[in-house]
Image 1 (spheres, one colour):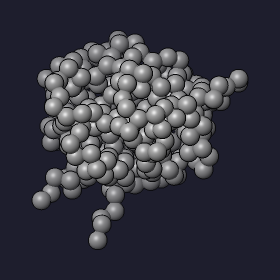
Image 2: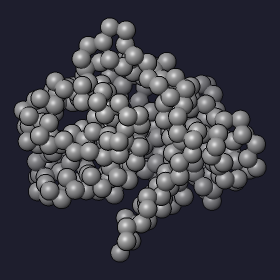
Image 3: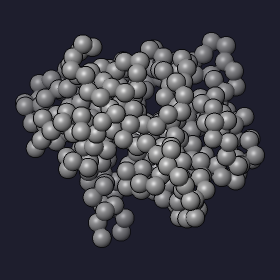
Length: 310
């Protein structure tokens, strides 16, 4: 019998009660990433707020002028996490960028921490007033360009295998196009993944519409796969299937879709070191979403143990 995925889902973040004595690492990039008042009353729960800047190489702790932690040196991340030794790490990555939470997750897991990640769905996304086919949600101001995510760097490593591009699709077709134009893969070597079911019933249709032009590139639509938009562990299974089908190649995963899918991509890259994460580092719009939906709590440590078990 297949064990259920280690996920807890509540109607909203306020309905989840964090454990006492843990450490909650969080950011505030969006309205839905604000900490519920009830969490502040949990005995012994330590709050660590992260502030990001325009660079991809560091973050600050506690305030915009607080201690700076570099992301370029693994030992700096280890020293940052060492102060929480013996406590469970809760990373609310709703309000954190990929280049921040992914290194924290990787170093935390490899340092032996018990880790759960928390994610709150958006209530609604901001529509573009005069949309183009590939951009009808107002989500990103621009992309900084494809560069490695700290601690996941592999872009300069020599390869004996051919790459297979696996884009995890969201609504922004221009980002998918940018990845294709940069990497220039063959059509048969692109395996797009669409989040089905989506957070909301109509979201998968928006994903298809937004990415229609890029999906037509060398008939990439023929290789489309589907995976629950809210489940990183289902995404991990889908990636494993693609890897097994293309055993002579290596995967380049582009996590440009949902954050749960990005978590599945990060876990896959951690447990399958030859995998490469290809990310374009968007600058998010400040008011890209309104309200908050369901809250998902992912026990990543339990999942990783299940994957490593004999």
